[in-house]
Length: 193
Image: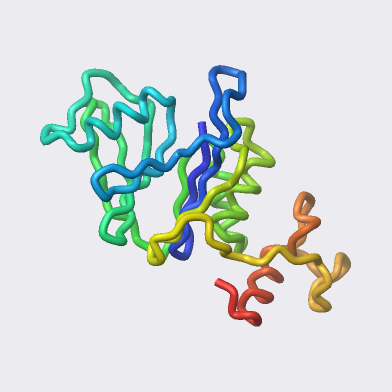
């Protein structure tokens, strides 16, 4: 399906598109802008298009179940939008002071963000574990209204406060990054958000 994550004003999302077990696109854009509303949306291509079309109708009612879920950005606010059992599209505002994720890799992304990773690095971690997440990881900064800005520096593990013997937070797969706790400390020390 996909992994879309939010943390600290940044929405990160993968770009893998599949048809069954076949990868059809490694750089699909899962962000659609219509009428000054941004949709960060998962699901099949047809369902995503239908979801957005119905979102702007007064009734917001589907004729069938659409396997789509979206984060929506409008007026610098974040909403989750979904289809209920009556085929009606609903939305509710999400707090910007928490972190959120949906899609097939959302459990991996949420855990990574709980451990201190950014939304972008959380989606990268999800892509390592979830078969339906991958391709280029893209970002959007809600408050800056910009796509693909740098959110964290990629650094080698040369921080003297982190060593394999002393760092209880390190885990396999993050060789080119600090462990989440040390990355948080590095970012704080260097004013990286």
